[in-house]
Image (spheres, rainbow, N blue to C red):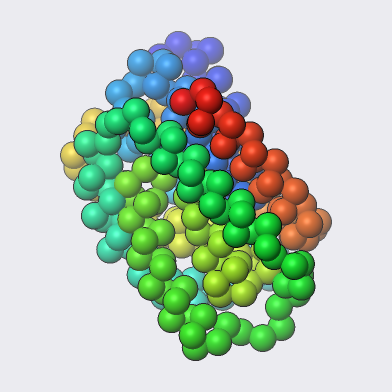
Length: 249
C-alpha cells in the first residue's frame, strides 16, 4: 500500500479506538476503508483484530493505572466469552452476505432501546452484582464472545447492555470490564484468523498504533468525565450507525 493509504488508516484507527473504548462501532470505520482499498472481506475482518487487541490492551492498562480493575471478575467473564469467540471466528473466516449490515443495525437499535430505559441511578455502584446477576452475565458472555469472534463490528453495543443493565455496573466500570474481555477473546480469535486467512500484518500494525492512541484518549476522558460522557457518545454513535447501516449498507 502507498504511504497516504497507511496514513489514512492510522487516522481512522485513532477515531475507531476512541469509539470502541467509549461506546463501540469503531470497526465500522476501519473495515470499510480496508474493503475500499481492495482488501478481501475475511482478510479485513482478521487484520482488524490486530488493532482491536492492541487498543484494548492499552485501554485495560490505562484503567489499571488509574485504579480501575477487578481482574478476577473480568477474567471469569472473559473465560466464558472465549469458547464462543473460537466458534464465531471459525465462521467469520468465511463471512459473506449483504444482509450483514442490516443485521448489525437491528442489534444496535435494540441496544439503544434497552439503554434508554436506564434511569441513571447507577452512576456509582457500591455493591457487587448479585448471584443471579453474575450467573446471567456469564451465560450471556458466551453469546457476546460468539458475536465478537464472528464479525466484531459493533460488539461494544452488545457487551455494554450485559455489563450495565444485566450486571448493574456503572458505565465507567462497564467499559473497564469490556476492554479486558474483548482483549482476551480477540487474542484467541486472532490466532484462528491467522491460521485460516492471509493476514496483512503491516496494515494491522498501522491500525493498531492508531487504535491504541484513540483507546488511550477515550479511557482517560471517561475516567475524568464519568458516565455522562459515555452515554452521550454512545447514543450519538448508535443513531449515526443505525442510519448508515440501514440506508447506506
